[in-house]
Image (tube, rainbow, N blue to C red):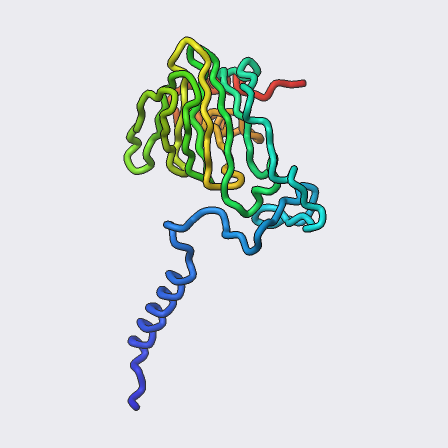
Length: 232
């Protein structure tokens, strides 16, 4: 059989390599926590082994308490936050039995008259909130064109914040408000925009923030001072 010309060989190699990459890369439609490979893998929170998640506790040491948490029944202390909100998480760090199961919850309470869960993202999960009480203004911003998708919620309403998008919730009523949140990750992660930009350690350079927000460095320093962690 005639030899394959060198140019054709190079093109075939590129096609084969590209096809292999597409097959091996995970599909975006199934991105999320890894699937479990056994019935349970209760997190050993004391283990020094570092994996994508937590190492499994010995089966003989697993108890019903590993799958139990009672912290969502009562309201959080909204007065402890400058924003007037309190988040109580029920993730793998509180419920070790969630390890490898790809779900978690939280309760968020908002002080009357403007209690705010400030703009933030969850890099590893989509969030769905169910309003327990109160009236909330909620919304998220799309990445494609910075469009705000927002509405006002009442008790019994449900709203979804897509994974990784900036979103917020604000108490729009005169009384307390609260939601239950569900996530498709055992540890969704939370990154507050204000804290990430103005309270990072080490600090982001003033010149970077001043140019990004089109303000002076004095304004940047004022915001940093207000968001700086409180010293014990």
